[in-house]
Amino acid sequence: MMLVIGYFDYVLPYQISMTIFYVMPILIAAWFTDKKSSDLLAITSVLVSWWTDELTSPPGQLGWIHTYRMGVRLFFFLFISAGGSSLRKQRDMIRAQIELLERSQQLEREIIRISEREQQRIGQDLHDGLCQYLAAVSCAATSLKNDLQKHALQPESDSAAEIAELLKQGVNQTRDLSRGLFPVQNDEEGLESALNELAASSTHLLNIQCTFRPVERVSIYDNAAATHLYRITQEALNNATRHGHATKVDITLTEKEGLVTLRISDNGHGLPAKNGNNGGSGSKRHGMGLKIMDYRARLIGGNLEIMNNPGSGVVVVCAYQQRQK
Image (cartoon, rainbow, N blue to C red; front, side, top):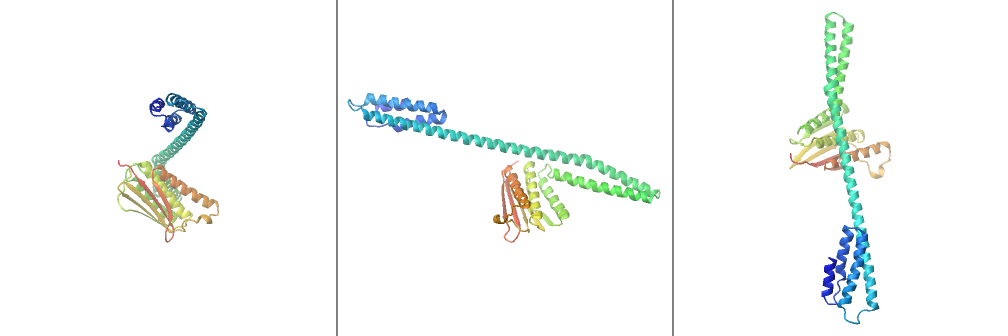
């Protein structure tokens, strides 16, 4: 390119300057190679320009003014070379930072997937292993109680009945723990079923009015995304009861043209004002919970909005555009 520009500089009249065109190969060299190559090309461009002027200028036109012009041109070309190299370095740094961020996000997603998969495995083992074992022992204790009653051994029968009841409670607690570790089943309606169970258990355990109202049938094809939406609901419910002291929580799930919208609203105290944050451990935990919810939403490519209700309480809305199956 420099030689082509030098050729046109040679064939065109002396009064037409080609200085600006010499900048193009210098910038290209600075952008795609390194500073040494672009500096070398800048010096070569000045030499080519000098040579064409020597060949095309009228006799007596060249002198110290021409030498001064070539010096200024060399300084200008070297400045362009330095600027282009600086831009290239900034581009490389930004590209490296983006790649590092992408690798970091990929690693974080992989850690989350491994964690969820391990929780699912433990939950499945609890359900299929320990839960079944306790259920069998509970049946044996019930059978023992019946045998003792037949032989009129009432004290021993009462003890066996108490053991059977404790084992039954252990089975229920193990099942609840298994559901907590593996809440969303691997099917399209798994999220609806999990949210329905979450609302029912929260109503019973937390002594609040928690309802789940699916407006229509919502199918989630990605189980990992469904699990993240469930965890977001869990955290929003925890914030509403622990920090907002809510007594009523409504959970809705809708879908329109592949856009899944999860909405959790409560009647609690609402979000604290920024200037009213006392920096205590409770507020830090509350803020960490919001960050975790936002992080989970971003992991699945969703958008999370948390705002105060016009009346009272907080509204959490997570919108997730799922890919078609």
